[in-house]
Length: 638
Image (cartoon, rainbow, N blue to C red; front, side):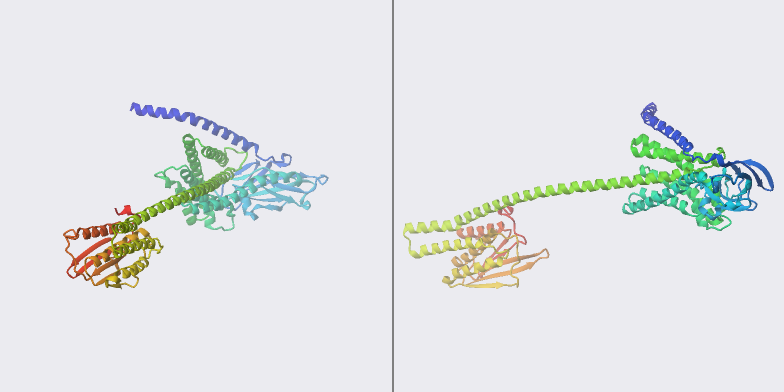
């Protein structure tokens, strides 16, 4: 236990130096936000303020001072009526007077000397408490009396919140118009601009999520932004006009939007989904279902009871998540998001103080505006991060292309060198083969001719040796021809030489091709393969001529297939007397014959072929089964 306590104490000591600067920064942001809310309040023309009014409400009349709160109500019958007076003199140099209302809820009707000059119910967006929409109306000159004039303001209140009427200003339009335009810019135009940005970023984030389904953080933030845009542009219900239940529910969808922002934070910081995380969406679902079933008044009531506290809870959760990530990561994204959450949370507390009348001199709601600004900032940050990632991918792709090109050039150079080496090796191997063939065949025959000449043998013997030497020379020359892997071409040349060899001995050569294609093509066939096969056939024919006393020799060619691919078979059969075979397949006598058969088997093995020998009193049969693929070199087959 002491070790666990020591580790926990050490962890706290490490986290404290990281958390303290962050908390101090958030305290500074909190103070700056409060000062900003005070300093950014637009100044109204106090010289034209009307503060003293009499209020007639619920059958009673009493004097009140503006700003003033009235009781909440759900009926438009007998709305609160504020009555006051203002002075006007025809001798004033400034023409054109107006009435200016900075703030009110929910709707107002203004009359001057009994004539209505302003009714905000004609513009549904002017009756949104979250917009703090100001109103201004020109007073026709014909309505103004020299001296005292009467002004009445009828305040239409519906919903759970109390009605509110700020100071009323009456005076020259040139003096009131700048304050109206400033408030319109801050509380009407700016929220619409932020909502438009939200809609654009929501589309971009949705596309990003569709292209990268494994990153749902984009889709969650896009859904939250869509709900914010819907709340901004869906027209609010203005009694007595009827409104759809769906519109009323969507206007109260802030709890669902806040829950989605918490889910976004969890996904953004790679947190595991909490066990009871689905409870975040319970208030929004309750507002949605009850509002659809019960009608427009219920979503507003449930929003006040469930929605507003849920928004605060979600903001506190966001603040906790970002603070944890700041301590853990110490990166710019966590710091930035934490600062944004602190600003929104401060604005939400400010609005709650206004709702519960703890701050009684104003009712300016700014949490919606700050919340939209935070969403826009987060969406822009994600889009910027995505674009930066694409730039990094493009840069990496460019570097990869450059590296691939360089590697390709190096490989090409390496291939050229390897081809040169392979060509040199092939030439060396071919030179060695030619030297060996010339030495073993033509060289031996020439040595025999020289020896016979020195011993003074008869001309016929020397002539036979010279013919044998010429035969070997032709064989070596023919083996150098490019036959394109078609062994039948080489066998055709061998047929002519064999027929010439057998003709003096009065032996017939029967050429039989059992299959139309003869032998299969072998692209890997090399000249040294061809010369080994031809020498095997020569040896078989020579044995038949010298030892078998045959009268006919049959050469059979066919292509077989054992299911693994086609292969060729060449057989040489004679009708001679044959000879006895030992158990190992060699000749039982005649050492020269045995040596010849051993050479035939060795040549077949070098080509990857299988040699089969059968001999009896009816004759001798040599069967050569060619491989499906010839080996690359002599060493491959030993």
